[in-house]
Length: 376
Image (cartoon, rainbow, N blue to C red; front, side, top):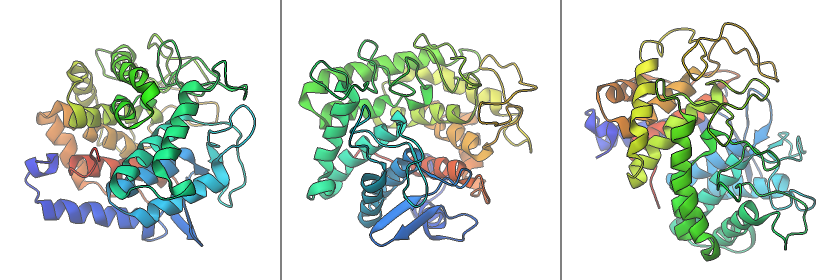
């Protein structure tokens, strides 16, 4: 039984709601839609930054494979391969984290959360649809990518690049070149499946990575508030890097990931008190018209900006925050969990320039609480 069914909604109600919100984001009115098509390609636009990101493209592919939409999946993956794949230099085998809408490069760097979701979505596609040829040989594409993520920088590698997983700690890095992490990049439920579906040679590494990742989140999330910083050191403390040491936009995904991990594998019960604390902290705040931003220990931030000029005194993505809290209900499953799940059901997509991030996390949370975000 899905969480929404527990609240009294029927399977038919839930399926219609998810399909309606999917259609709004991908094919709906231009005030909500973030998806575009041309020829046999498709892409998701970050409407706040007027670019295309591996984050959004990989999220779109995960949504497509979960909802059994192969044509959409293939359109997105073709765009990624045509414009985002780097084929030379230190980052060969990784993907440009940002391109312009016409496909021109906006960065020659990568962001590992995109690669994580690409690999998982491709492995699910192999299970759901079987493999095609070339770029549509989903399983090969996933396993080749995982090899780069783990083994780039090995003695046999001549690219001069760095792995996305730290070899000593097994932690996913914020970027391959930096020895810090991003707690919202920690998806141990993916690592368990990389071990099962991925390269046999890396099976033990990913089994260990899943355990280490769950332990890391215990360190990164404040025991009293449940908050984690956007960027964090390997000891879990906030990384003082360009204003990203607060509980801010990236951080909203941490409780969502923990909830999904619980739904898939049910082995991360030690994190339940952290998510309960987070829901308790935000319950009196989540419906405010302007929600404050906090240090992870709960101190309100009264002034400041990130390096790219984002104001740190108010929540920029309130629906994303709600979505993360609601998806966390999968592990809390109590009165506060019901409260946030109901708020999510009652919510509507964000309209306007900043809708991209909010609405993708919103759709993921609807899918997760509706029983439509599963191991394939």
